[in-house]
Length: 53
Image 1 (cartoon, rainbow, N blue to C red):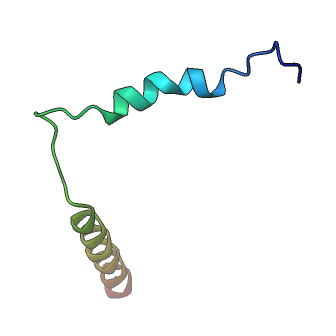
Image 2 (image 1 turned 120 degrees about the vertical axis):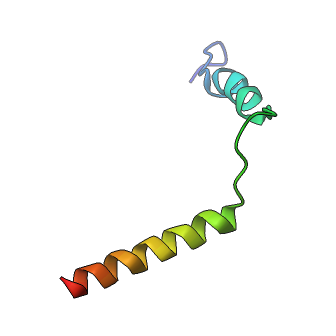
């Protein structure tokens, strides 16, 4: 790669980093532990229903 070429990797992702870094006051905030717990409980429910029927 010559020094004159611009790969666009870092420059093209800079706007996305700024976009996702901004916090919205109206956004729903869910603790990651809550998401993991809900996923585990849902998986256990699916297993129980699979064995029951």
